[in-house]
Amino acid sequence: MSAELPLWLLAASCCFPSGPTMALADAALRAQLSLTRRHPSYRDRAGVPARVSSFPDPDGRIEGSPDAQRWGWLARHALAQLTTSLAPHWESLLDRPRWLWLVLPDEHRPGVPADLPAAIRHAMTQDLWPWSKVNVVRGGHAAGLLALEQARDALRAASALTTELQPLAVVLATDAATDAESLAWLDAQNLLHGAHVHRPAGPRALAHGRVPGEGAAALALMATSEASNLAAPPWARVLGCSTDLEPTDRHGERPCVGAGLSAAARNAIAQAGSGRPPIGLLFSDMNGEPYRADEFGFTALRLGPELREGWRRHTPALASGDLHGASGVANLAMAAYQLSKLSTAQGCLVLSSSDDPLRGAALLASAGTGAHLPMEAQAWR
Image (cartoon, rainbow, N blue to C red; front, side, top):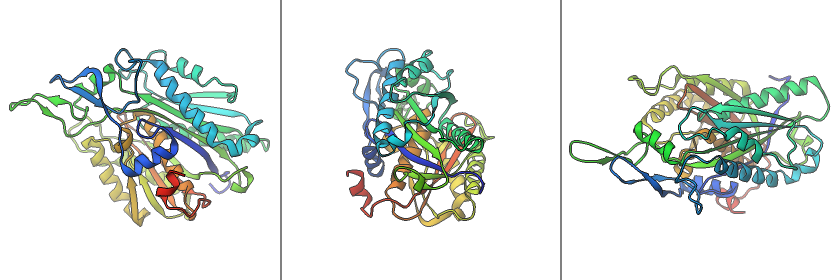
């Protein structure tokens, strides 16, 4: 690992209803501030409107069939925010190849538009971003970690082949599981938080399950030997990233003990080597499912010796709702933003579970260039 160029996260973007910009997303995360509304058309089995975390919808797009244009709007918003965040680097990026990793949900998931890849590619076609390579990664919640892993390997392979201008890689994810078809799919599995199910004593609202959300996020990555080679301080450094498979099916009778998630986390930590900073932050993607809670609990117990005393946990779904395929990249973006505000070295472990067997983990570290302002003040600066 020592011969490989370090991977720097130059900037990131994130948007969801209670956090439409990166700074507001961070404020919503720390305040656990969510923005939910009753779905305009979908009713659960007791005739009660489902609760979703969605942006205002004056055109009624979430009432009908899944709309790829809505996903494209979210992706363009995330890319526009990323462009603004990259302003200090922009002049140095003009002549570099730009590679894009698009993270989209599995095409077989109910509620995913059939024309989604074409619509997102069209949304990403902009004069400021002449993509020289576009990769599409499809999957569940952990697909963003798989895309990050692929981007890291591609950037390091490129750096080994040439000493010329290194490429800029962008990992962008978007998801909008707030249409009626998606809600019916979750409701049928008893995964829709607050939906009513029939019991002998009468309809009862589910205390567990997901609050479906929508949003998008993006990361800008580059490999270079030193942060001083960059035009401006990076937000964070990617010390490790790994994926693995979980052997316990979430529909099975056995509890999930987090074997796959623990393996991914341990491998990501091992990639960082012995000189890594202490891990004081942990981002989990628990979303209200008992399966995820079991998985995280066992994983956190295994990782206890690796975590600094007094470590803090963030659960972004409490603010954003369940962002499904966009959750992995969104969690990475929020983690990088918090690390960018720190003036001391600190590690942050981002864990990603999924409905499918894929599990992912990434270890980020602060670059130590943040201001000495309290986090509460920095989020609104």
